[in-house]
Length: 163
Image (tube, rainbow, N blue to C red; front, side):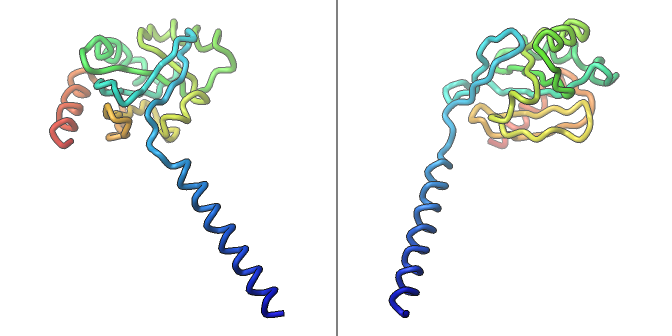
């Protein structure tokens, strides 16, 4: 009887150690995250890219979102900064998403929320919401409310000096 308990205990320990090893093996740093935008173009966040990424959640029914889109369009043209948009309402199709993008006059790449789990961002509780991601892929700041190009550039500069 004692041998059976000892064998079960040893098998349990082996299983536990194997499980921990498997979990830890999957916890390595991601070198690259890739998604597709509303036009099917690959969007990549890679360790080699030195750009800061601004991810903005918006919706067509959100008035402050509509107000900040021109600022984000301008920001996307700045050197060292990229802007990706996320449609908060998760459209049923890429055609529906494209229609919303045209309605909002968005010039930067946009993805549906179902496409962004690789970034590790949680769905914001309110809109507009903006996340700033460092070149190494670390989410460094979450901002709630409408943003301006100058405000975001200042925030990125502050984050650069802290890094």
